[in-house]
Image (tube, rainbow, N blue to C red; front, side):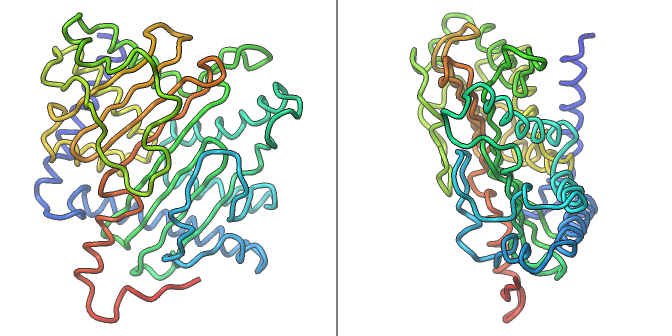
Length: 364
């Protein structure tokens, strides 16, 4: 049995287990087992508190925002001036604690991807020789929204810089939302130097291309929505994402092997986050009808090196991938949750159920 098949079976078993847990609860808090959510919530809060305590008052002013600050929604993936506390201004001890906060939201593979994306700035700087924007692997900014110590009031955190935006919202032990989650790479493939051959998001590209190439002609007519790829992900940085048209080919029109590839592709995005959050996202998909409600759309060339784009979407989520810039060697990819980005569904339930005067005070 091949590794991809083994992985698919593992994903399927995880989905089934978490679907059983999710069906036993109503509302957003039912998306993951309460014990798992509480554990993840505690670990994030502890990591954020550890970092906060190590910062100077001046650094805290840069890193800290109220939970309701509009800055929480001001996310982007381009090189631009940012608020927050940059890695560049941290001591070695503070950087270790900041890494701990980042790790508290990610899986091991997601953490490695995030740090490797940061490191690509050094390669870009060498390639561009000062002709492009400022490239600096230390210009990644950490922000904390609200008070992680409180334990009851909602809070959140973000790590962001060029080609990376990781947004988390925590509502006590009731729920955690990871999204929007953006990862990009330039170069998508390092083609020279000691790191030649590095493809941080190679799996996301290869699985999708393998899927589209297994389609027969009738299936391709549904799945390939354009001969030309769009110049960027279509959802871009909108605050609230929504399904795109056309949806492409539905999973009900795929054979079992093709469905397995589609499932692996979805998992490659969800598994960027720590297992509790990944399982939560996958359980949402199952609760909304499973993979049969999911569509796959492709645009652009089918061969590696050609500009291309794809999206996968269902009743609860949208993921997009675009590789068109810099001679199709520059990737943008994102996972969006229609109701869960920035914790919207969790916050709605929290405020509806909170007693008068509780859970609405903001700190920092």
